Each structure stands twice: as structure tokens, then as C-alpha cells.
Amino acid sequence: MRALRWLAVVILALPFVVAAADPAAAVCGVARTEKAAAPVTVWMSGDSTMANPSGSCPVGWGSQFGALFTSGATVKNLAVAGRSIQTWLYEGNVTGTKGSDGECVLSSTAYSTRWNQMLTGMKPGDYLVVQFGINDGDTACPRHVGTARYQQLMTMMAQAALARGAHPILLTAVAAITCSGSTATSNRGFVTQTRAAAAATGAPVIDLQTLSVALYNRLRFCPNNGDYTAGALGAFFCNDHTHFEAYGAQQIAGLVAGALRSQGIPLASYLR
Image (cartoon, helix red, strand yellow):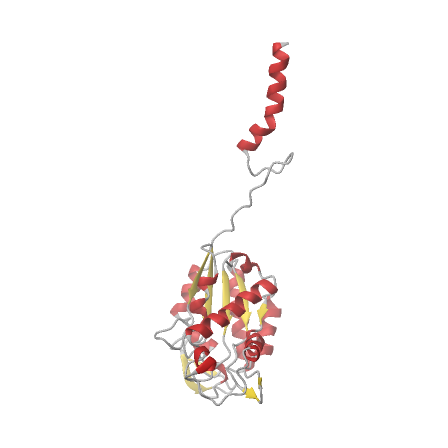
């Protein structure tokens, strides 16, 4: 009889022993513990509207992006002011001469130090965020980039990320503030080419131009008298229609974070 009572106690206690040994088991009502997401690096490539500031203004939105993530995501912002997608990729090797195809001639196809840094450091699970299209519309070399060349280079960058097991996210250029009466309007190119590069690689597109124009309309930035030194306009933009004060950069970074969530892009799981 004593032996039978002892056996009954052991049988009743067995589920609790299993639970203690394996708290992640989801058997017989035992709770499962979620596995923490693996740490990732968010690599950022772009121009002055994304770049880290060297003074109080301009402040690129990429400099404000890291504060929106948990410690599981590290933002490495390698955006540089004044760059087109081509001068960012081939720094120092883009000449001031146009070839017969209308594109700026490359003196060498050697990549810039910053792109090599990304290619070397990028690991599976990381993210590559690319936003150009502002300086690329320059008619003169070295910044000029034609639409076909732009699409080719953006596609190449996305493919390079995919080859390393990373996830590219392609953005249209953030809008400057231009008005048609009381309405803010779109003013950036290369939208079709950005979407085509995304379609070719399966990368998501965040249409930051459309999102930023909608934000400017919500904030009623139009019409305005062109004074970027005071008021709501001055608090958002530097003394021009393109670059951001810290507050404006924070708002644009928030638009990108919101798009990660609304579009179901997995990087959103690292947002605070």
C-alpha cells in the first residue's frame, strides 16, 4: 500500500518536474517562453536628408532612427551629404565627364570605403535601408545619374544585401516642401525606378515622398512665405526647403518607423 501511494505521488508530480526542466514546453498547459529576436544591424545608405549632422542643422532623419529601436537593433548610418547613389557607391571614381550614354564616366569600378564596410560587415538577418534620388537629378556630373542607371545601381545594392542573407528596404526620396496654393506637392524623381528595383529583388518599398507630403499637409505647411527661420516651418526645416532641424528629422524617422509597422516589414519587431 505504501509503495502504491509513493507511485501515485511520483506520477502526479511528473508534469511539474517536466515544466521546471523545460519552461519553454507547450505541453499539458505548460507556458512557452518566446525566444528573443536575434540582434541585427540596420545599415543605412543615403544623402544629407538621412545623414548624421555635423552641426545643429541639417539633421538627417537617419540620425534619429536608432532611438526608435530596442537594444536588439543597432543602426549604422553611413549616409553622406551631397551624394547621389553613384557617388556614394564609387566615391572619387565618378568623373565630371558624360559618356555617349549620357552617364557620368567612371575612372574605376572600385567601391567606396563605406560600401565595402557594409559588404564586409553585413550578416544574415541584417537590414539595408537605401534612400537616394535628390542629388541624382543633377544635370551635371559627377552627381548626375540617369533613370536606367539609378535603377541598375539600386537593384545591385539590394541584390548584394540578399546575397549576404540581409533584407533590403528601398525608399523613395523624402520630399522638400513645395506648395501649390494651400497643398504640399510631390517634387522628387526616381519613384518608378525605386519600385522597379524592389520588384526585381522582392524588397519592400517605403514611399517616403508620399508619406512626407502627407505629413506636410497635416501640419499645414502650405501656403507659406518662404521664411524658414521662425514658426512651425522654421522648427521643422533648416533655412531652406529641403533639410531638417532635429524636430523635423525626428518626425521623418517616425514616418519610416510607422511604415515598417503598417507594411508588416519584419524590422518592425525591433521597434520600441
